[in-house]
Length: 139
Image 1 (cartoon, rainbow, N blue to C red):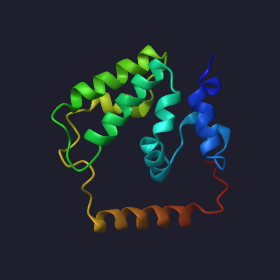
Image 2: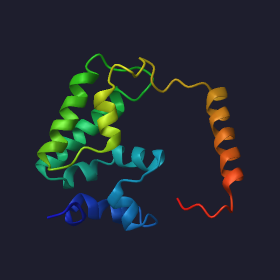
Image 3: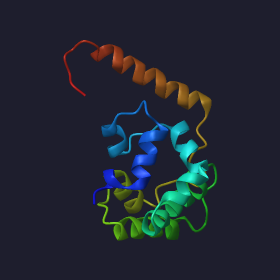
């Protein structure tokens, strides 16, 4: 059975009816949606044993490695995440491969980006969007 037939997939589709099936299938979510699912105990209860193990590993990474302070056990957490995804038969995404291959690259305060840096990033992106607007490029 593919991932689109799992109870967890159907739950996410029902929870976020505005999202297309393609976005849900590819895992395209924004921060508030991810936060909402992370806090949802009902989602935890409907997953199979393998899915729940992978979900716990993902939640651990979100809570202990992607915040302001990185856990001292983050390397073991990433290994657990990869192993649990492998047990489910998932292929490693490029993002997960990057995370695994560059564990030493990430600073201790991973998400501590100043408002000035964040604003500069958004200004740069806006400038690029305006530059290429209407040029016929497909995304």
